[in-house]
Amino acid sequence: MPHVDVHHRVYLGAGHHRQPRNGQPWVEPYGSSGYDPVQGTPVHEVAFDTISFTLGGNPAVLTANFVFWSANTASNGTTQIQTDYSAPATAENLTLIAWYYLPASGGTGIGGSAEIIDAYSVALGYWVNDNFVDVTSDPSLTNEANAGGDVATAVAETVQAWGSIASTGEFFDQWVVSPGPATASGRGLNLPAGADGFAFATYDRHTSTLPKVGGVFSEGVVILDGIINDVPGHVLVHGVPTPVDPGWGTILREIFGVLGIASDAGRLSKAGASRVRAAAAAEMGAIAGRLGALAKRGFSSRG
Image (cartoon, rainbow, N blue to C red; front, side):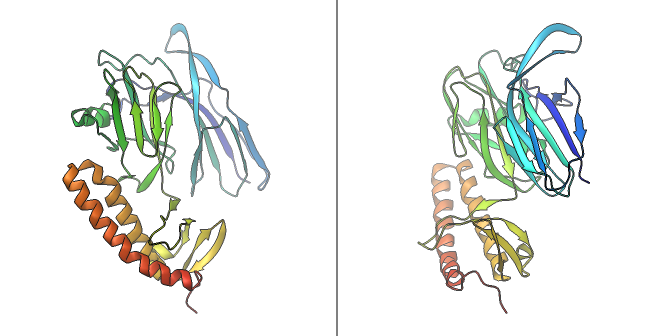
């Protein structure tokens, strides 16, 4: 019978908290709970919008706001920003973490307004220390953003999350941004002057989206088995497991490689980024012909 562990943890952000990370970056005011659901029955948890607690012997009552749920089994991980979590129990044990954030967590220590940022691995269900952003509006702030985990907002700034992180092999999923003036669009994070909140970039390795290339198609696929190692396997197409032949493994790796190179081109000079993206576009065009041939075969496997 699977087991479910439920946690409510408060992320403690402060100046220079990422490289090296300041010990355990969270507290768990109320401890955890757990139960054993019957496989296939709903696992349903509702996070509080806010939780109140005291920290370290200080009698002052602190209030933290809900940010997102992290749900992890041994083979999968997901996040969601709604407080209401519901999914059927599988055969695997499940760890559910409701993450909260203190709007005022002691300041950033840099003497002015700043946005606290961090990277979260969906696969690990935990924060990672990898470099993950460029401050495109002011590259001199990039090192502090990655090492310190904060971006000064004396003036408006723009931040671009990397397309992937090396330590876990995951791809960018989304920005989770606190209520306030900061906004996110794709991998971009816009910080108006005076922005003083948090933004977490989540990374996930289980799903990727194939772009429309050369008018062929655009599909969301999940690699289930085999094909990434050039042996027969399956992908999910519109949620349906579909057999594919070994050639798909090679193509998918090439697509992921091209997308990763193109997405990271923003770290180069404008001229360098232009050359890299032009080369990536040419490579994707070459792949398009092979995609078309496979599409005509109806995603079938070799007999």
